Image (cartoon, rainbow, N blue to C red; front, side, top):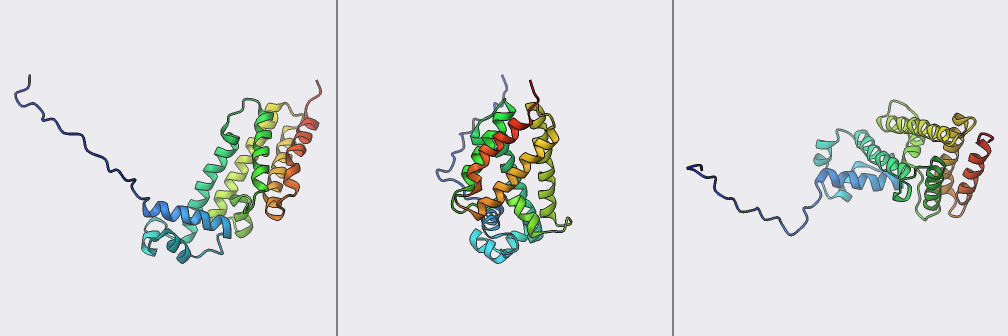
Length: 206
């Protein structure tokens, strides 16, 4: 036995209250809400820091510029997009056809709700036509990856021309994003039926 046993330390008590979000987290949350609802160009730094309850120096310590904050917003948004796509409705689907249809069903239901503003990644490509903009770059990488993923799922379904079916599904999805902002009870409500028709027409004959 050790001659100098280590003294027992009482467990540290944790605070009863939840720690408030860090300034950087509040900035990201405020930017996400404002950028998605109003568009990136329309929102100024002053509005973001006022909503977040922080100062401009706090913002610029984490994000060197508004463009960098916009790119960070889109990376957060993209992460959530993949979660929604790969696990529509919080579920995992083994069957590729059911996977795609579940996503389109979920997306269509969101697209007819009040306040829907489409896909933030699609919207930024309209706001920033130059491929040099850091936010646009995030969007372009995501859209290319989504196209590849849809083609993979189309091939797994057994489509005769998986590249064409994948592209057709992407066009349908992008159409939901846009028309969901134009109609509250519009074409998005027919998207699931349209997807089924596209898929069924693309299958290899048995």
